[in-house]
Image: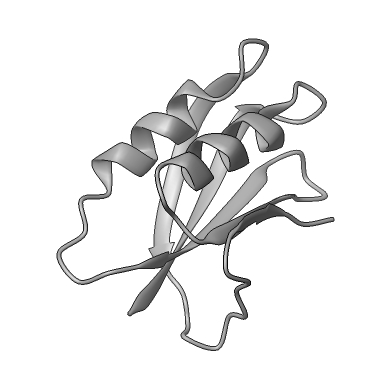
Length: 92
């Protein structure tokens, strides 16, 4: 099991982006969290499985909420030391 971190750029704070993304990723069966960053971006971190198709995640992140405008998504792998609950959650 691995870990992937996505930094979402654009108008993604104060537009219900975290709520929409967390609900969509939870419905799709992902485990992880979403949180606002102080620079206006949003971080999405999730558990990944070997050979997992990331295109579904990218589609959800790019779609966002009706009022959001995503201008870019950067992906990187993260350490296995990240602590996850058993669901997808919004962190503050």
